[in-house]
Image 1: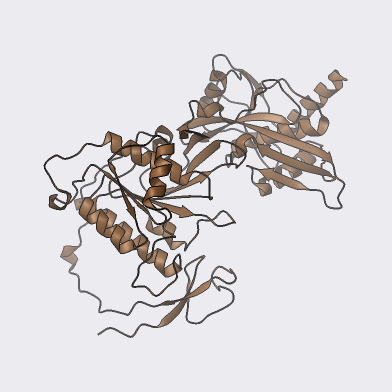
Image 2: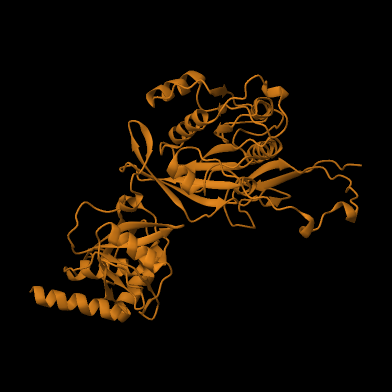
Length: 469
């Protein structure tokens, strides 16, 4: 016999539940994030026989089947394409291009898919998909979506548009139509009428996502859910939203640049360290012809405060230019600003530069940024950051085209993985003079300058400055 449902308060940040309202969540420490909800009534535990539970060895393994969408950079970011029955959460800031990219993906999938002649969707067997795309939108009317499609040159008749905010209707359309791809734009605008909660609330989003995931698994329909982000850059809604879906991709970009980067933060069907690079134009989101060179500045000449590194995104090597500016501070507390580089990492490298490189910048303002705002988490960029900082501080240059190497707290430049692949990509783009730690394999066409420590680097820069004067 079930128990009566009780009132609980759920944190919108970490999904922790509390028996009463509190100003601060005890679990994650966030303030003002508890919202009222109901606990699920307890039910009798079903009895399961041990022989009904298969052993791991008796289960037949199946290889994940990726279906290419036809948008090359999107497929690369997801590890090969969409997956039948998989649910992808695509998030990004307003105006970044989420809906534009998704509409182009819908058109590409619809163009590549083939109809099943003579068979109605409701007569098909489970797992067999009708060759159309379902676009469910709660943010736009059907006419608005049509207008946006016309601006992008999309006129296909294989995209069915369901303009509704009823989540149950969307799930019903998935089961009856069984499309090749279903798109939900967006999860924050859908609602379950039976739930007495506000649209976009924790209970609404959790229930909606659970329904969509269950329906996708039952029908084999790949589903892409569009989500919003908060002002802090986090995905809006409960953290449970990211746990329920199979893949999480985040579309990033600078509002002043036409470059867009699609990063995979979670992927049950492939790697998570791969990025797709797009360029926004009047024709929509276009895959970059050469992503490796998309984040390089126009100048090929060495300038003070500029350095190029080679970062790995999965098995792809990308060249990224790093620019630094060091000036005398006019504030009581010197300023530190970083774009595309972790600020805490910058503080560590500044300390190493002062201790082992003998270039103290404690009284200077330091600004550092990557071209295009590309976010670098690869520690191999350390040497390029140090080179940019040191040359900016001393106002001189070294004849180097690229720098690769991780810097330790003791000032040594450590060996790196995939060094040969990085050097090869730099040479392909005409950057042959490369600074690297000792032991990097020799590559044809590359001139390697071994940098064993930061002291060696700053000594070379100081000598170049003395020679120039």
